Length: 442
Image (cartoon, rainbow, N blue to C red; front, side, top):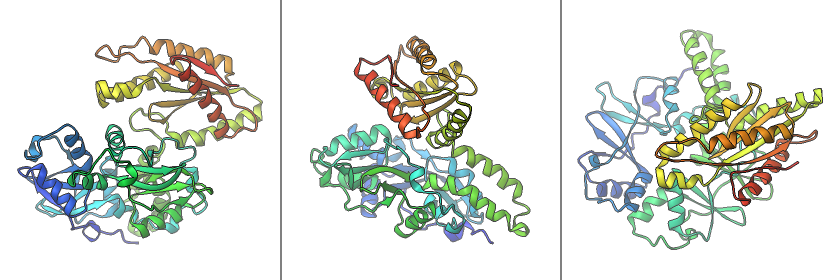
């Protein structure tokens, strides 16, 4: 097995501008070439100007005749064209989907994306019986909007949440999509953003059934050249979305095992592979901001703890909590303040909970905690202690927050979906009851 060199994979069809060019120039080039991002060069350093950044500037009435060097841009990691695909794995930890491939003199040779990397993961190495629906189970946090919602409202939601796409639905069935490329077209053409989003959505869209295997989804991505996959159930209802980077993380361990079988070629790479495998296993199970478990890992741990509960006839309970009016924190204090609130709450939970308790960031500003051997009454008392202490913490700039809690017990015969639904119902009742309270749903 030979690992492809980056010069063999890199895309040379790259749009570049200079720091001295204007924002209008960048926008025109992106629209003309149907690109959603443009590379900005400056003394062999490379940055990315995204359509989301341009939208933000446009909504804030920024002067597009000004030079690009008047705004702050994210720097793109670089790698020499003579390195191979294995050497890109550390660089994938960045949220940016691009890596700049350079010549020996550091000039730009091309770019490599998550698409290029995932295209060189052999589908035969993947878990053929691992279903894509298992990865997006109960994913109610997919970014979606009704087809009659105004375009301006959808664009603002995408900007506030840093989302690069929005699935457009009708009666919960996906009928279209808006991506950052569409934003560029809307902005460049000065289209009416008060019109409903169905006016500008890309339609129809291709979807994958939740029963499809990872192998089939990888093949689907390769064929369609998609950056994301929209998942539906047997009734055609939207249930989730999964990105390429998530498939990379989940596929990497299996890929590494196959590569290790080729010992003659990999003898010098074994140490590196072990380190990278551990790093990717952690990446696939940990939320990068709060350092808590993510939804996928929580689902795996729930099954293990549930089996122990049934075998030993123990109690077990679950609490869900959601930060009250979290959007106002982001709107009034900025996203950095919002991130700080999420981290502070994570640390407070860890302080109050036992080592055996399992904490996860469920999505957005919502957290879930599984408490083995704890009954509902004990968990209710704990939730109230956390709730009360949280309300006294100054998050900076006299920012105080509260949180609402839903508590339920785990029953024999429960699926995770059943337990989560009861806790979620209790959480919504807590919100409807004025927030900053704990509601039990037996």
